[in-house]
Image (cartoon, rainbow, N blue to C red):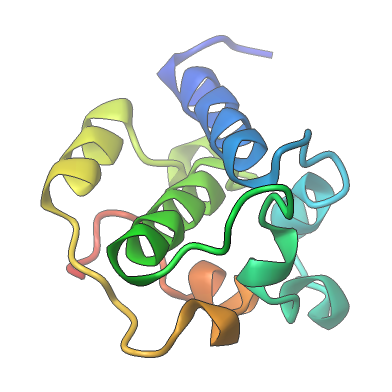
Length: 122
């Protein structure tokens, strides 16, 4: 295995998921790395993987949770070439605009995956 910035980005994605989930995302990671997404794991609501010990996020906080989840998923792409750079992650954090008009309780992991990479306009 060749160590590169893309390895750091992958690790950053794992840490982001740990923060929003309140535990290691071990069971979710293989589903993100799979080339054929299984519908059962990706139709899970984002709300259902959030740390249940914390108050349910609303409004702007919920929008930022969606941002963090989207970035984490982008960082976990199977191919290192498909992962964003840390510079792209930084820019997305600075300039992000919500791609969703629907409430957090209706957003699935599949929708976050389908949003594409962080290079695309949002």
